[in-house]
Image 1 (cartoon, rainbow, N blue to C red):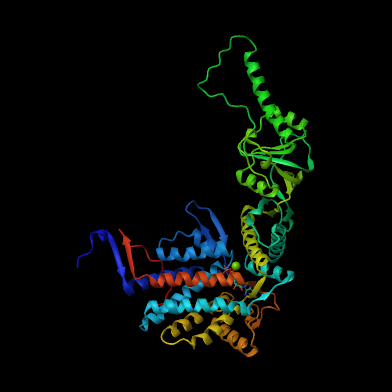
Image 2: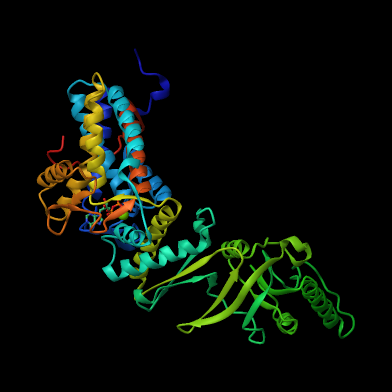
Amino acid sequence: MSEAPILKDTTRSSGREALQKNIQAAMALAEAIRSTLGPKGLDKLLIDDEGRTLVTNDGVTVLETAKVEHPVAKMMINASSTQDRIAKDGTTSTVILAGEMLQNAWQLILQGIHPSTIARGFRKSEQYLLQCIADIAFESDRDMRHTVVKTALAGKGHSSMQEIVAKLSLEAVEMVADEDSSVDLSKIKLISQTGGIVEDCIVLRGLMLPKKRISSNMKKEIIGGKIVLIDGGLEKKTVSSDLKLNVTTTGIFESFRQEERKMLKQQVDQLVSHKISVLACRESIDDEIRNYLAEHGIQAFRRVARSDLNMLAKVCNARTVGSVGDLTDDDVGAFVSSKNITLDNKDFWVVEGSGNAATIVAKASTVDVVGEVERCFDDALGVSVQLIEDGLVVCGGGASYVALARRLRRYAETIPGREQLAVEAYADAIEVIVRVLAENAGIDPISALLDVVAEQTNADSNNIGINLQTGRPDDMLSHGILEPKGIVRQAIIGATEVAISILRIDDVLWAKQQMEMPELPEDEM
Ligand code: ADP
Ligand code: MG
């Protein structure tokens, strides 16, 4: 049968050949970030096409920066990005897990097991693990949460930085948490400054913006009052270029200007009638009415970014309006305090309102370090949110994965037919985390895994993982190596999803040219 015309300029690979290529691509990608996993993971130096450099060991950052062409590799990267969005951590683990699941699936395919059978077995395994993950999780207290956030930062920055980032992130998240413990991360603002040390990072209640009131005649600090947010300015109308002003008598231009000034003052009067004491505009505020505003006790700020106006709206329960003319009482917000402060010779405006908000000031010596500190805060905040919303944690150092694999093997025995093999392959795959953690710490991966499994079984404990200092199995709980249950759960969901999607592809149609295959490490397949 001739090819359908629609496939004319298309390269096609199908069946087992397609699957093999796809699995190779997925494994190559997992291989590329394997060495960054864990506290002993190494960093990668990334250089973009404009020569900018970035040193990181964050899996998702590496993957998102790399220009990857292969569609299957892109699927893996998407899984990692999703993990980053939902759980903020476990991005490297997700990709390594998916790579290992596919490698084990390939071994089964070589034995003649159909990919759909494997996909079904993988799905069953996932569903079973999601049920029994609750058995290995436990409730955390305040101290434990601190160590959990620190574990999430392992391998990033130095230990005093991890300490302070963990502390501040938890504090910030606690400040903005609602009564039902739900957290809206957009209520936390992260601002960064170079020229300090990490130990100088601070967190404060309310919103802090690098802004100064427009006139020093205005009050520096106001306690309690009303605020208006304008998504525009308080300016004279610019005279449009094709308008001609016929000046016939002296002073006509001046009276025109006066009229404009009067209109501006009327707007201020309107603010006064609403008893406003703080004004924030996205655009400019005319110089000529600075004093008029000050005389009426209004503290004003101009050129406030729209995103900051939106945050202010949340903090003060206000609504942004297009102009003063549109203002109604419902749009007016309330603040607890609005003050101007100086920090390291820079001016800041700090607003506290009835709505919760927090600002973290990240500091470090250079731009590169500040970038890494910001990324640490990002991770730490995400993990802190998980902990505040759901305090359940599991043991790190691969302990939770081994505990889950042990349960899965027992479950496999109850499954008839070839799916049983897929469930066993899945159990083997999730143990990869211990092997890679060991590998990256220069410990023999196979013995490490076997020792951890044996120790967990003998002690009947879910908390034994690999101690990367001694290379021996150890109780992770007593060492404070813990992670949120949500991260492990999401990593399992994400990795299974992408592995199954890749297993289901049996036909690849490439337009025009053959894509380049990522390089495959030797002796893998
Ligand atoms: P990911 O992007 O998947 O979060 P990381 O590089 O952050 O990757 O590594 C996380 C893994 O490192 C987790 O499995 C965690 O349990 C493990 N880990 C972190 N600190 C330690 C430690 N001190 N000892 C053993 N394992 C650790
Ligand atoms: Mg991590």
